[in-house]
Image 1 (spheres, one colour):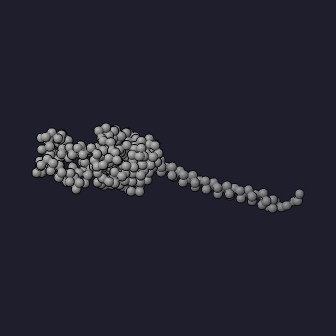
Image 2 (tube, rainbow, N blue to C red; image 1 turned 30 degrees about the horizontal axis):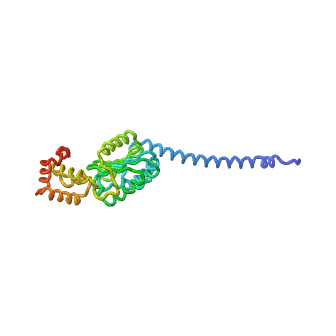
Image 3 (cartoon, rainbow, N blue to C red; image 1 turned 90 degrees about the vertical axis):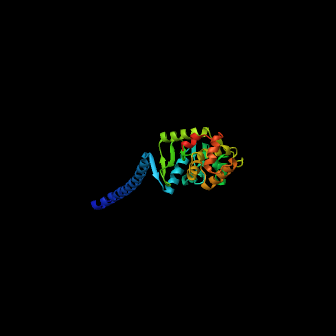
Length: 269
């Protein structure tokens, strides 16, 4: 043992301890910074989850929310698309996501108007849905469009334009699922191996005749049945020729007199 000055002993004993305390304070500051960022992220996510409805027309945000809903989907995905000629952006973005959900084992029911059978691009997509385990049906009219994942998250139009409402509400999603089920009951199964309208042309023709008899305009009829106005005019011309009618209205009246149409549909347009 050697005697040293109190100052030397203080330096020897206290400096390492002070260095350790300083290092501890630095680590503490780092931990506080990390926890603050985690807290901010958690709060942001909690606020987003608390929003029952998010309305956006931002394509990137729509795609991200679709991806999130599809990745979380484990049970069922429902699709209803009314217009083949002008398929909406979110449904086109959802196509590969729906396929992925089906391939992971979830059930899927896809509803389109009969006119989807005459569109090559839509037929190709539906031809992929069937092998993936999905079910596809078409019907004479599809007025609403939406996607529902697991009866928890729904994507629906938000007025005019391309804005989408993302609804995180089980009650709304269940209501849409019920609407989908009612339309599904009277729809026709789609077979990708069958050519053309595959037995649904009569159903489509009856709808066109109903609407012609009501005096509906081309734009309204095309929107109701989900086809372009140009395609509509070709169908109408064929119907007029078949009935020997001089006008579209006359074609509808002649069809009604022959008992080929139900005027109640047209009057409800």
